[in-house]
Length: 506
Image 1: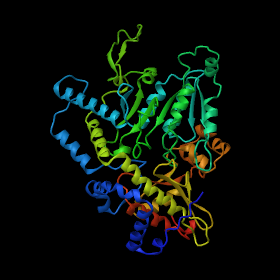
Image 2 (image 1 turned 30 degrees about the vertical axis):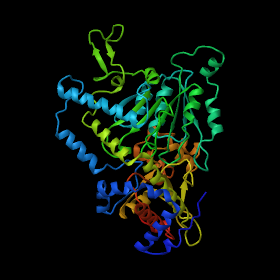
Image 3 (image 1 turned 90 degrees about the horizontal axis):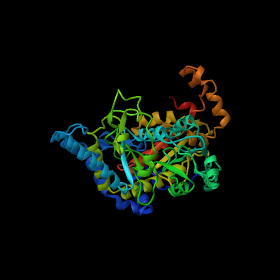
């Protein structure tokens, strides 16, 4: 569905006058935006580099932007103290241990998670958290890995662990209209009679390895669709543990773990506040964490190990209890305090304030982009996913079309945006399932592309899948986004009016 909002008369004006008129119209139609003025102050103080460079950054789903004040606070902390490896017991190490543990507590508080219920495990990123679950989860014959078509590749990859241990893998399909999962389809898949479920219904005890895991993203990093968090309790009632990918959701939405209780939550902190990179987390409910079994041990994860006793009962090592047993080697202990500083920055802005701002701006963009037409009346672009802001986030995936209806490759759109000083993202955004549904790629087409992959060099494989990898351009908004930013992007998009695909160049 394409929205037909007409932003006249603003768009018929030119230059600054047009933007001023559009802003007045926007503020009348989105009065809640006025309550987010605190973010304008932050933009002016902490993100001056954007305006100094005349840059419009619209890739917040790819990575958030750090504030100048975050860097200053972190540097002052490191410059004013001596910190040591937290695996030691000297004074600098004990000081750092205290700061690491304080950051764990701050993370739980930020997500309203009870420390009696959840543990925080530091990982390199959300992918590291997902791999930790995948490699350690007790998949086995009779168990199942159930996931939605709309999932990041780092979640899709868990199917390799599941299949290797004899569990089945099933996908819940999406509807093509708005790229959502129908409640009927989910209920049907959750109630499917797996061997484990048959034994439970018959009152028989299941084996310890026969557990099932359901995984879905709180927000799609392709379409912006926000999937219902009510699925968590629904899946748990059906006998599943639940893995929630919150990486795209957390930067502009409150994830309240006092209300929702997923067993595992994956996060990347740089997506929330830009700095530091290289630190993520797995938030795990204590009973669910106890079910994980590491396939190896490493420095930092053990209390004691032996070489002489490696073949003895107990295998010659004692795993450290709690989060440390899942944190391989030495954590990024100098970077972890910066996570707390970043959370302070978001709290000062207010996560609900951020949410209100980006959704006002997203609503305006959905309306005005959807209204763009070529002179012959054909639409300039197609937006994938919901046409409005109901149950969606501040991420918009789209493809541009010329007046004859020919698709303009999203890579070419991105290159054109780069020349205009606008940062978008092109491709499938690591979500192959939702891309295949949105662009109507069949199972047969995709299976044929992978048929001979093991006999092909990489360059040859790319030729086989050429024409099947077309993705979309993605604009995503965040804390520092202003109306001027989204207006410039709208103006950029309007510049495709009446342009033929074969005249655009590379």
